Length: 292
Image (cartoon, rainbow, N blue to C red; front, side, top):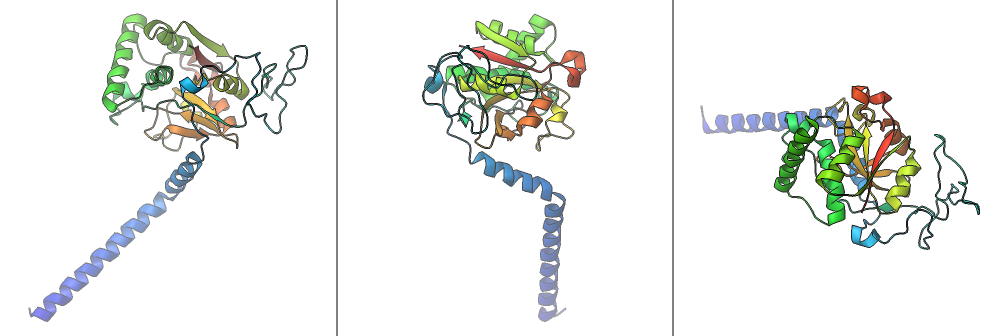
């Protein structure tokens, strides 16, 4: 074959390679278009999160019943109690929307350090179900002003699993109360409450007082776009704030992209359920609150 023929063959081969690559790229974009769209929408929303406040910045916030001058009242909701201290109104679930003498800010965000429940992206038997452990760790990291490395987070997950196994006889699928026990007995927090039959504003009130909360959830009702579908039967995550638009800001350990992950409030509260012996979707709505 002459030199001209070889050049033509090389040119033809190059064109075929380019066309094949373009076809493959187009196919990937087509089949992943929803995920790609969701990814960029989520990144856009996260870029507009309110400034995050550390524990040192919020530790002196007033408790419920005290007044706070630098708070912004929600535009469309009355949330201040009357002169007798009675609640002014309730939301659709019958949960009070207000705390006497206190208003909720229009937006709020706590600087809760994040870790995935699989810090090295190894989704083995332990890490598939380490959301409770990771949520506990993030709460403690907020109050102690520390951050995670992948190694320190992984070591801490295994430390909690060992403690649970010795204390409970198992580590998998701890209830809200058992998870609270980890915070009390392993981490030494004296004031840890499990509050039941909650609404979204109960969660907001605690967070507005500088207390990120842990929520147990029916994971498949959350609709997190980064979960391996259909999502976990049972899950835990941390709520750290909300945006002006009303989106709930979470640290969701079920994905490496869970830092500042945003949930629609109705979606989140609908998914909140305790373990209930594995009948998760019929479990009580609960939150774990730590006061330092």
